[in-house]
Length: 115
Image 1 (cartoon, rainbow, N blue to C red):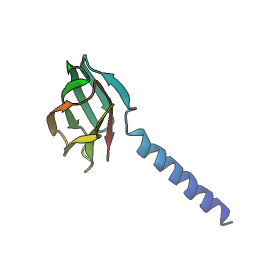
Image 2 (cartoon, rainbow, N blue to C red; image 1 turned 45 degrees about the horizontal axis):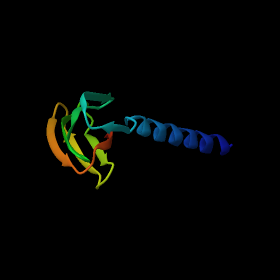
Image 3 (tube, one colour; image 1 turned 90 degrees about the horizontal axis):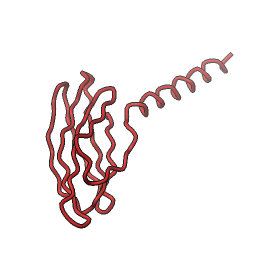
Image 4 (cartoon, one colour; image 1 turned 135 degrees about the vertical axis):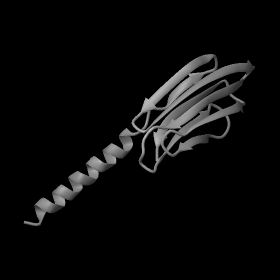
């Protein structure tokens, strides 16, 4: 008899983990010269442009926005091909944060997620 509640709890935990993971965009490798790119997930959206500024250098400009009243933040994770990854975030429904960063890289993996 105790078997059903345990299976139900495991199923609920697996579903909850899947739902938490679903609130993220896949990381995409963005080469410099990429213009006006946007991504939207449930709870957030972002837009950005990656300009080439020289050999293995680029300039990333854009915004990230929180689109859900849930007490969570929208994060944009930027992972340059070379250099350290960093985050930009927007918290509170309707908040949009602009950003600019100079990268010592000609591409970056960019992912939007909620946490």
